[in-house]
Image (cartoon, rainbow, N blue to C red):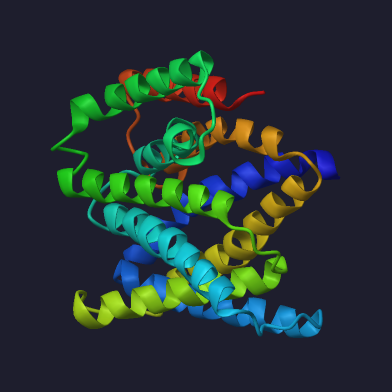
Length: 282
């Protein structure tokens, strides 16, 4: 059973980009995310109570966890949801943000004093070339420039969140940490809704189905599987299969959302996927 967890993780993680489209078709992206992480926070809070884990933590751990949630659930997912809401193809959004392992490897040198090898630089170059190949033809037409900017912000945010997590030293239980991260993400989106967005949610059956998928299968399911794999010392294997996400997301976008894939796009996805694999493999 454990052997198929990486495959389940990839399918769930990739599908999140697909169910984002029906969500933002029935709501503004920030109201949807505030709604989502309200229930995610409640879920982790109840699970913490069930497992008898205290949610009373130090001020330092509180700030660290909330900031991590703002970076990941706030800026990262906010950027992805917003970009898809204004026309960014789900597969292209997945391609850009899945360059995160490469960017993390590059920034780990100056920020964490970790050595960046020639292999990692080679993978980064291929990942960048593949991405530019996909973006080059359609940028400004099928791919909106503002959507590209939002997705790049999402990429930077998830990278900084990863590096931030590497620098943390707290030993909080996973459910407690996830509770405060989800709460931080929820508060971030409530702030955006109040001051910058025009909030609306159409509570259609499509919205409920897509939102339920993201709450239960992605926020609870995919993240739990990821943490389980890391706990079982399979982190390197898990990271290495991230290179499958852009291609799987692109295929799902073509199958479920009727997004167009050209031969150039397919070539770009292939090159970028190889680049991520080279940069992250052991």
